[in-house]
Length: 474
Image (cartoon, rainbow, N blue to C red; front, side):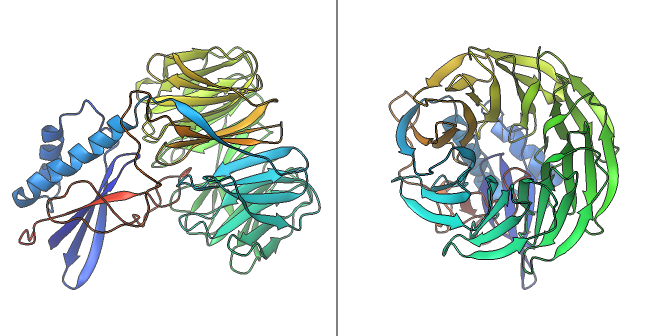
């Protein structure tokens, strides 16, 4: 075996080892979920070398440089402020949902006007309008990695797959008897799963549009679903107060996570899908071990219904938000002990997400604002003002350079990182594509790493390429 190069995944930190074995080129991925800006890089390199045969003494210097590059990227992603860059306004009726392309170059919006629109974030141009649904478009999503397709779910009881390039409808997915409220591609884009108010989820072939299975078992509306990062398991959350896990190869239910006393409002896998988090109108969140179908922790502290829950990129922290006007951060590794309380919103907080590096928390509220917070202290870094009605969405691009907020005022606002806030200068442009680094170059921009990055970030990550020395055969 011969190591060719390292590939660096920035968020969460990870190291790809590309190597040759005979005439085959292979890749091994090492997750570095514990790497942070305070880590002793030399100690981390020594530990990795001790358990990985490909990491010989001959590549030690390149390994250390790679780890320093990852660590620097984490530093770059520390606390920042953002400036309003663009307002997107075109739907004739209120928005229902929005989502970001991972690079931050494009976004999707759904609306009561029965359309979905694709936008160029940089200049605010409407690139495409997807028309054909007979009722409200409630769910919108990009295909994973290539973002060549768009998926919509509608109150007309169907979901549709569209070409992002032409705007043509590729497939119409029939079968539900009530509103479709969530729709997702699996990591390979071979399957589409839909959740409906008819108490079922359904699985379809993306290529043919054929229904492959109806997932029955919930006794209430199915309002949220997620694939794991392999695509062989689907997680659903329902107003019946339970979560269910389904085998997408057989479309059979393999387990039920029961314990919440009221409706599920959201649920999510962590990065490696070893844990599931859920939140409920019963004022609690829970962390589950899906393999054992076991509740590991009940997260209490909010005074009213929980609206959203999310893991950070590494899965080490959990964030929740509530109609009690607060968001909270919890330490998953320490039995979900409280880390910080974010107080300052004047109305319900409906959406929460971590920055890519995990240093900041972004919240959206019915008080017409979004807020940026420091995770460690709960201090408010910035209030993002300007919307005229309730916010229902907020999100970061993969690099953290761009934010998107969406409101019932019928607008989305694009915010770009302020390069004059004392942080490091932002990279010029949005990174993408790229070339291999010369030998010893630890920070050249490279091509996407062809591996799903996690359940909520299934696209391909921007990576740095670091060539191993040519004579380093292992």
